[in-house]
Image (cartoon, rainbow, N blue to C red; front, side, top):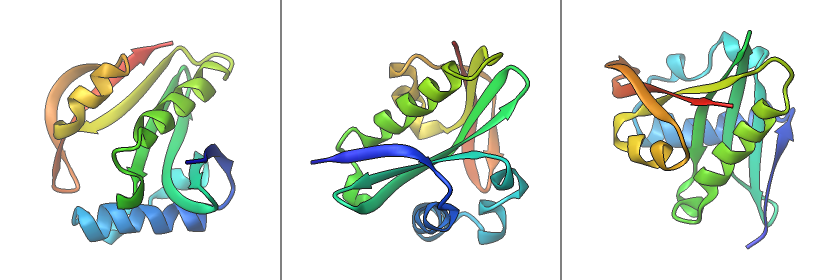
Length: 140
């Protein structure tokens, strides 16, 4: 298995993957999936043997790198790709001058996954597109 994760300008492919996972599988309303932050975000694309199978985005705001829209298609699940996407996003955040923390909104069922990667939950559970989430952060 040869996976490559890199920054991409190919937002169309990222959006297609996000549509497949968030809209088709999880029932997120299509009008909530793509937003104005996509225009300024840094997009990551994971490719396995020339096939796109995962994506994430990073939105930089002052000292914070907000990691979001993390998804892995069915073909890539259980392979460690989700972990690799988060680690790549954190690496990019660490390499960005002035950024001191990474933040994300985790689906509640995935809190343990992010805790294993060093993130700590804070604040209350909230609804985002009909799915319970909780904010998490990691000091860089």
